[in-house]
Length: 428
Ligand SMILES: Cc1cc2nc3c(=O)[nH]c(=O)nc-3n(C[C@H](O)[C@H](O)[C@H](O)COP(=O)(O)OP(=O)(O)OC[C@H]3O[C@@H](n4cnc5c(N)ncnc54)[C@H](O)[C@@H]3O)c2cc1C
Image: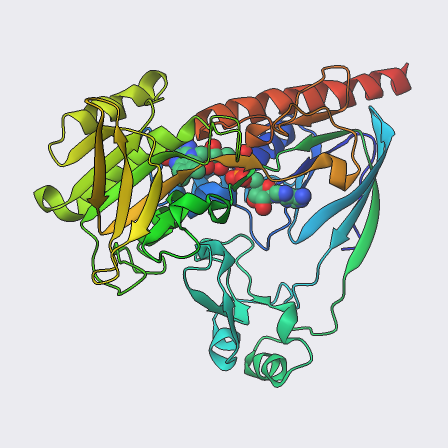
């Protein structure tokens, strides 16, 4: 890692999701030197955790494959995973950045044969699957992970399991002597493509996410649908592993609410509409989706999904902000209570499974990180054209993939302009 070379002509991109990969590629394909850092052991971000993504309903593997091919082919991009920024000093065109690189304990000899994973006994919550399943103490983050290299969980270091993993490796790929590295780089511009985290559903007490097993979140539902996900693509109720066919989707779960998340994440309605197509795909006419909503926000061409759902007899729309959820102890069914504002009648509706459409929050708190960035009241970056640090993708606003990519391309251009100006000044 110590061979990382950077100058004031280098662009640092923080975050290896779709936005960070786009910014890095656009800048590198214009001939700029780029360092792309990602805190997780793999690139891909949250799009890689979706089952399919609208508007075309592609599998994320498809877009990821194209971007990875471009990254592998471009020597101008240096990818560093398990890496985070700890400090930024300096100014436009001349930043000094401190990075912390956490040890993977696995080197480039790894062929991802899986022998180390099979050898260890310890298991931990699988972050990639939002804790819906366990993974081994030596693991590949997901099947398309890049780099395609295992990770030894630091929690098994010093245990018999770590020795078992090392002994099982035929390629001398496990190095338990790796340790945290700290680097200082000089770069000209920085693009923060640090994305989002799901709003913590535990905070929405009336919806019982913390106590009713069959209340899950929209991001968990995406993993459930994934063929390589925790349920092998089946919609199973966490309480009893029975197939759920009657599913309620609650819009604005915590969003547009001064008690939780004030902003509208824009994506949640379309994401739930998309998820009703998953239910149809799975069960045909046998499934039932009920959308509880305040108003449906499906912008421009995403409105097609709304019309499609409205035309589907298995999809029902209930105009209501759900007041609270209780559980039928005998069946494990969550029961939704509220008032249908079309007709003003009270309901107590049981369903097999409830999916909370939770909002997107910025994943980085710049105040806590001690980095001077202008953010709005919701914590999203407000780009300042006079600066050398920019936001890209959902770090700047709650965006869909298409808009995130547009924002990432714009930020690549801004960063290129910064380093070009430095070169022109130094040359002149
Ligand atoms: C339930 C749900 C379903 C959705 N479905 C769709 C859909 O079908 N179609 C669609 O267009 N959009 C969809 N979206 C929105 C989509 O997920 C976002 O548009 C997309 O994730 C934006 O990508 P990003 O790269 O900006 O952020 P992210 O995907 O969050 O990527 C950010 C990356 O930065 C990394 N990172 C964070 N902090 C740091 C740090 N300090 N240092 C280094 N790395 C860091 C993260 O680990 C991550 O890899 C959905 C959203 C939700 C909630």
